[in-house]
Length: 310
Image (cartoon, one colour):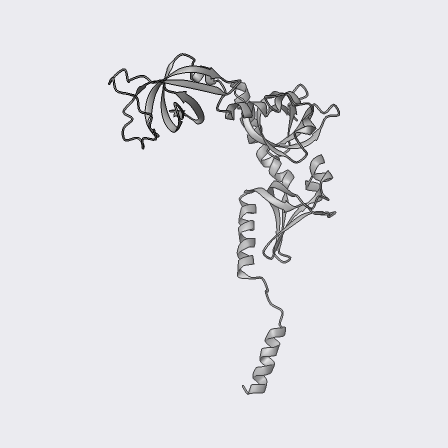
């Protein structure tokens, strides 16, 4: 083949129609097809919130992932389609992989239908056994009286409500003053609501219970009773006072005092050391005031736990 023929052959190759899909894109489409075949769900798929009319789109390389607008069937999502500054998260099921157009169509509703039975069963099992079901929910909208927020539990269309009195431990004037549409919150499902139906259950939720459980001062008066002895490790010292930790209650920092008295076991002066361990008497404890004070009684092999900071 002469140079002229080589040139025309080369030009002809450049102009030919061929498969322009990259290897990375093929692998991506293969993976989506595998997931679709196995009915696997994609959790917390993030879509940019765009002012579009047909649905939500996102790109993964050359592949477009599309959630049709008909799948966005909750009041919150419908009303927020024009909020460009935010993102929406969905658990979705793949319903079509269009390899020619490099497009993957996903369904939020199909994902809901797949997981709802197992979630509802788990919730009811916990409630029947007298335990709250801890989960997450999206705030959808508020009642006219501003005393109730309606929730989308786990983002899969299970209805929940939370009364303003269950938002926090303190007084809350209105639910919309502390929450906004789209907030993702931790809640405990405590019971079926009075409007709950077998085919369409609705649950009462509490955020206050979650906060209370995560508060290290909750039930402190039962865990560390007044006028009992506890073992405390010193973490800092100032004059005749120090800060300490109780074993098993590491989230709490307690206030300690040590009198100018010798050890009852050695007769030697008690030396407070950072890292030192001491038997202490609980002189004050209050969950409401978040106070726990102790007084040193004796030293427990404090040598070697840290440096003397006296």
